[in-house]
Length: 152
Image 1 (tube, rainbow, N blue to C red):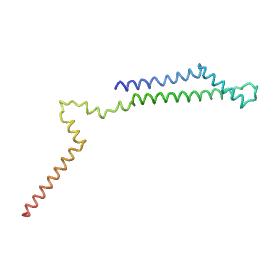
Image 2: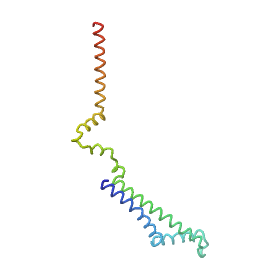
Image 3: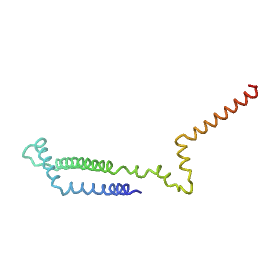
Image 4: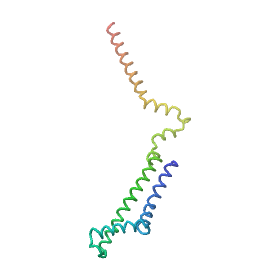
């Protein structure tokens, strides 16, 4: 594995528990949650309940669910943005783990000197040209034999 893929994997492994930890901190401890909860409570109090009435337990569930949804969306968007930035800057793991090109570079050149050259010629179509030339040469010999047999 390359250092980039190790770093990428490590960051992805660390990102999931950090997201969970951040969610717990935001939902339980954060003053931001309290402020958003108070905002929702005020909105529900103004638009749903009669002014001056104490908020019921059922309405409190709406407040906290609304807080959870908003903070979850913010946290999800932030995590997606961080992941996208890391992907763009570090590259995807599939790029690092792609071994198709590196397999040819691992061949011991002294043990098998012309394997790379042969592979390059086959991939460039060089042998195709050789085969076609041989076929054309055989066809010309055949024509020459026919002409000679006819007496031309």
